[in-house]
Image (cartoon, rainbow, N blue to C red; front, side, top):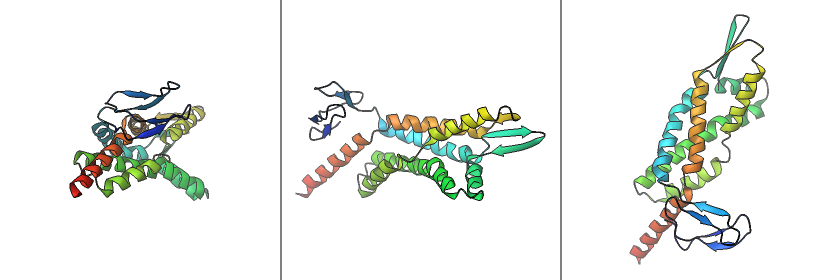
Length: 211
């Protein structure tokens, strides 16, 4: 439940509002314009942990197993995300290879690990500096993950290569789709606001005991 001391600004009319107590499943609406400001998620910790662990399991096959195999004139070429990144680097496009590596491999992996760690610390009620640092880092890293952009690129490449030969979709694409789905659901269901509130409440209890 969110504290009465929290405040927020309406993104539609810029009204400064005091955050009311919100139970899981309830929404906060702006009294001036009616815009939806916040929704308290149901069980964000367990859901976030389950989705992050699922994404971590799918991460290796999604990046290192064939996404599609092109059979042209008897020659087969299997493409993976890792192989595509290395080919960009070998062809001299090191800046593009670095961007693809960060956005499609490094940032998602770090976010999966951070969300899993955050959820475990909350479940174990470890409201310490490690949890605060992980929450801050996760807030910055989630801006770099762009799996949906690469899924669009895969679909465009598949359509363009249909006339070049026989294309077979691989297990890597299935795992990448599952990882993208888990990431998207996590973006919707994982609620850092509620966790920050728990950190604040834990610090307030510690301050009161120290008096």
